[in-house]
Image: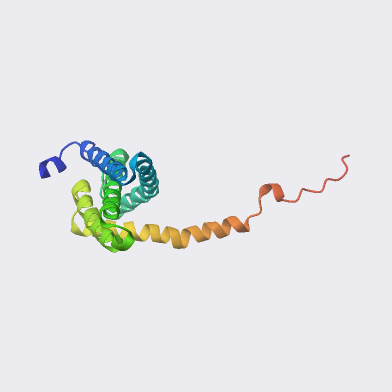
Length: 175
């Protein structure tokens, strides 16, 4: 198994993880409520991954500048970030389906954090300190965006008057 995870192909392993995770999410949804529930769970998963993906890319970009290390091309970084997001989401869905309601949210977060650390170390080939810094960035970046950047942008948008509502210039007589 570890030979397969350390394959020389940077595309094969993340793509297989993405397919297996989305397949597991679809399967768990199908087990719970049939085809309609499976479609709903898969829609939810795609929305969650679409939210997490740009943040993951930004975290890896910041980490690469911080460590002065090249994590690869944007394609391989994208696949690896998607693989980690899909795997953590599959674990969350599995905990919800098999363990019950949201009483398991703290346990799910702890398991996802351990899986995240392990997958970053395996897929990106980082050391212990680099992995912890990437984990800290992954927590701090969404928090900072949500609590600092978003309110500033929202306030700026509310203070601006729309262009159509601007008063027209008074026109005098033409000579």
